[in-house]
Length: 163
Image 1 (spheres, rainbow, N blue to C red):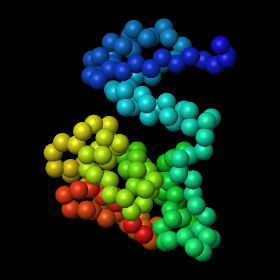
Image 2 (image 1 turned 90 degrees about the vertical axis):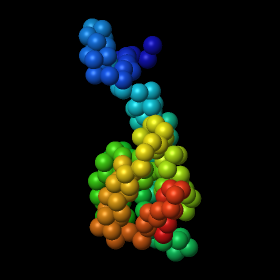
Image 3 (image 1 turned 30 degrees about the vertical axis):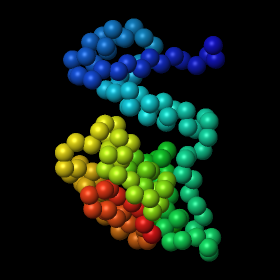
């Protein structure tokens, strides 16, 4: 053993199951209850990332003259902020996760289904108004930062980040 405290992660999809699980785990030193395996993985990724490697999308220096516009745009996952030059703006968890997908592969189209799996952790169902709402908020935040990048909709397919 490393001397680190142990953590039990319980997965229960309904509130009744979560209450029952909390009662069962009450004597445990520390426990976390989440509603899906996807949430548990995301938590473990956040815990592991600082110890193993830097954030997956390190900021790129603004001074590099050969860079295309928009490359200096950075998502700080530790603080959940979007940064352009010296300016920052906070992101909600959904905004953060969607933007991490798009900034990881600028110019590449992310389909609605792929984004829904990556951000919401489930298959895309319905009209996608949830996703469009998050994209609308992100576009406003990019505008407030005066960032040259924007999120373009590819009709019937998905979204991409373009400078």
